[in-house]
Image (cartoon, rainbow, N blue to C red):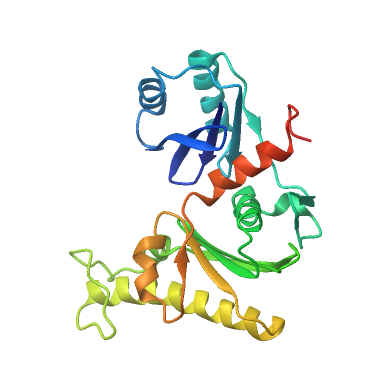
Amino acid sequence: MKLLLDLGNTRLKWAVVDANEWILRGAVAWEEDIAAVLTQAWADLDSPQRVLGASVVDEAREVQIERVMAEVFGQQVQWVRTVAEACGVRIAYAEPQRLGVDRFLAMVAAHAAEAMPCVLAGIGTALTLDALAPNGQHLGGLIAPGPLLMQQSLFGATARVRPGDPGVIRDLADNTADAVVSGCWQAVAALIERFAASVARQSGAPQRLLLDGGDAAALLPLLGVPAELATDSVLRGLNVWAASHPGYPSP
């Protein structure tokens, strides 16, 4: 039995997998009492044979999770980091360790699912875009603010853009609240479409467009191109990594 951890900017997601059967899943936001929530969620679990984690957060939060794991299960966390090549995926970056492990593992999951060629869009605090060729070669990608971070940045940098309500997404907004939310979400959708079109044009082949992240489901209907949800891609990538790297710690 494996316990998989995905430490994202907004929340921690986790899953318990036994013989490739997904037994339990859960998530907890960082502003919650992480230790209390996880201790309660895992109270009835047997100690896992392995604990694997992927993290895009600071070391302090990683240490916090390591302490919880030691207290609840007496286990260490095997932190998976981005490498130049693994599980059939080859990273385009000259310095692979600078590619977020969330992006790396999403590509590992897509490769294992034989979803290539594809464009992977992670829509969360940040928007991440990556292109993966049929042979597992990462072609590169982009990073931009996610729709909510884009809104927050606008509010922080302006004096009079202070809508009194959240607003709704429209093609043509007639008030500030709707204009802000519509502009930010449609900007993200447009960048995803542009990136996918550019990759398809350069490769000469259509691409599957896979969306993941906390805001993926909300963004999906805004796209003018075919796309599909690929939920829990980081956790699924961790599971693939675990199967191909049975040793501890990770290479």
